[in-house]
Length: 401
Image (tube, rainbow, N blue to C red; front, side):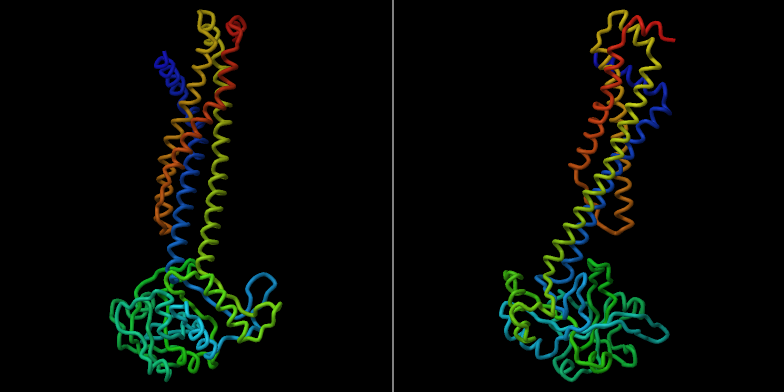
């Protein structure tokens, strides 16, 4: 019985193939959009988490001034060498404290030149940023203390200036300073903020301050907590120590900011998760639009087949059989649209994640939910036209022209 009903439903759908295709197009777009959006969102979230992890383990960063709407950091006093010394002496739970002063300058080698981020720091920077060397060595203590013109470069900088050649031992000009390259950094890729972490030149802090910046200011301090130590405790210790050093009275607002990368990463992940849900919800609206399209075309089909319905009822067909006939047609339309939509969504997600260079992370539950929802749409929006057909008066249906 059900096989015959299904066979009749398929025949009715194929009889008007173009109309049926246009009807299920809304379901195809809805299912495809939901799967594609959620998959892309999952990949984006995973990439943000991975990029945040590249910034360093158990990392906190400290900057002068407060950041946010209505707040200015222009007048906040920068950190100095004594602040760094106190942080290193007092923070017993810190694995490394790295002072950093940075700016953008033109780097020249031969006929090649480019604008690159220049960072003045010391060897603690390698610990806080989980940096490894691909070639060469780190700074010597004598080079750090005396401010010698030596530097390490990132992979992007090497590729742009030297091509496939090794840069070790070569000299580049940073602004007006001739700097010998002593090391090449391992690749880290883009950060969570979209910045290329491999397009960088590192030099001793004192070298940067004396020869490039022209001052002794330290703009940022990176602090890496020891393994197993809560970064919240280290953050509280930093705030207490800096308030003492900067003579901030009780009740006064800090003139510095301490950020925990775990909190930043958590906020970024939560934000991308919310955006993924919103995109999925917006895409889901097209499923409802597709359902309305199915109901509309089924009502047209009932009107067109009024005499057929009248004949079936007149020769003994039950209302439940007529109801099932039209309901199955609506469900078959929805399921075909759901299958095509799943394939379309997977294809779009694969192409988009490949183009955006983010991981393809498929959630099977989303596929099942989207496909199941397409079937539910067929049942809900197909029921009213089917019930209308089943409740027809056979005599009036037979008189229909």
